Image (tube, rainbow, N blue to C red):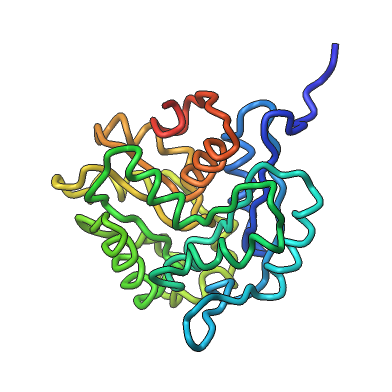
Length: 262
């Protein structure tokens, strides 16, 4: 009897993630079906991870992104994702497509390449969501919150409202930029997040989008969908779903929202 070893015989997916985060890998491994392996390249750079040229004719990947791309090139991957919501949001119109173009010669012709921004828009469309309630992590400052609202509006999914999660009394007096350095990324509690989304989701929202790949939330997606009677999509769930589809894998995955079951 052979024991399960997570070998990627169905798909092998590479994901670029923030260098000091644990959430993306934990959530992907929780959701990934048998025969799909996940391989992370850690990026330590400010957003966006690829910088626009002065004439905005294209982007130049940051050194960590380029290094990871060169390593992924040798790994026989089926898909690669730039798993960083902030890069897509701050990069603005055209950044996602320009980044895919810039990474393609570094990674080679084998795997499909995508970004979290592309994945979330694709997931919203596949779920029939046109006016999502946008839920954002507490470490997004006011400028990034405004950029996020504009990003989804500009991509045909104007938010019906938005919520920056309140992480509670322990963290409330810290500015957004100080939350991660003080350890909040490893002390996230999903029950209060569930309660805040359920209490504040506007009636006109036809779905919920929880943005931020470092924002722990996949454990509440199914329950929120049942309680709100609307699709609930998260950043990591959307990227896994899209990478699976790009890899030709359509295995239904129960327990993490309707997106992964159709």
